Length: 374
Image (cartoon, rainbow, N blue to C red; front, side, top):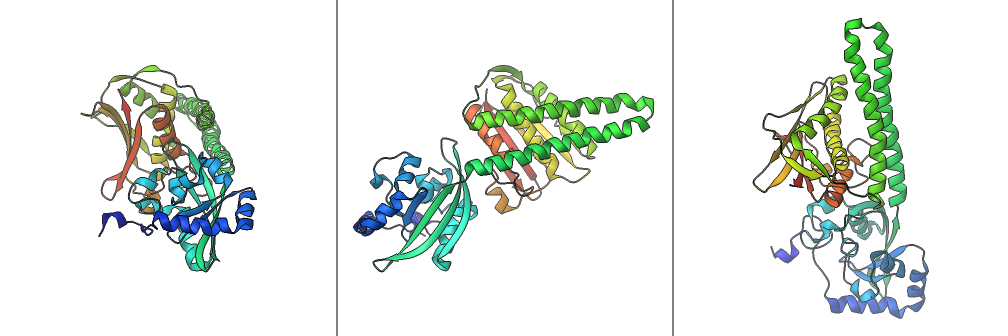
């Protein structure tokens, strides 16, 4: 296969620029149509059947920050918005991740059914995230097929809904733990009181940390967080974080352990943000596993001179879930979840100058790994 046509989802074929300009003139020659599209209070693109823009309205240009419409002509939606996946293979719609993209699905479905609505979540190279609702309609102009796409930015709506539900979900989980221990404490023998009181202390601390975690994420998304520099010893740091979650895991008859290969290295980073990242990694692993499971945490410095922190659990994610695991509104845990893995990537890559990745394979389980400069 011609590498320029390689694709894992939608067609990679493109129209020549001369063809794009010819189709652009079809829109311009219909002055009432162009005026109407520019007057709509939503982002509107007109695409050809190769999913390339032959017209975008003024609101699209303002949103993506360009002045000359000719810079937008011929590009696909993901390319216009700078989607990280749009440049991995042969443009927007051709990477394996595009199979999970609502924009690509809506446009392709529109060609078959004349109308389609879907949602997509994308992150650009500046770590900015967009949640878009995409309305696509197939129409004819001068006897040619075009796809009219209206894009609605539902980022605030999605973020607010997800964060509220996650906040209440996480808070209630911790409060239920506190309530459960408080209920059985009077029935226990006095020799067990110190153990369960320590559980209460840990859960109370966890409650405070959950509140702080949401505050930090809110500030980070608004670019209001100011990074601090702390001197940290890697193994000591991991031990402290693991101990906080071991108490919660034990209540669910699960365990969290640090592997023997872990190492203690000193480095400088923002301890508050790194704590949030590691806690999300551990919490996600705990939630993914049934009772009796073991979660393993490792920290080491590899030959690349980066500090690695990894969390392993035995469950394996579905392939379709793996393609969208870092999207802001995605979760395997149900509707209106989905900030844990997104926040891990946001905080690590935007503020800690590191990277986050994962593997999930049968026989190996799932491993999330953070790499940090030391």
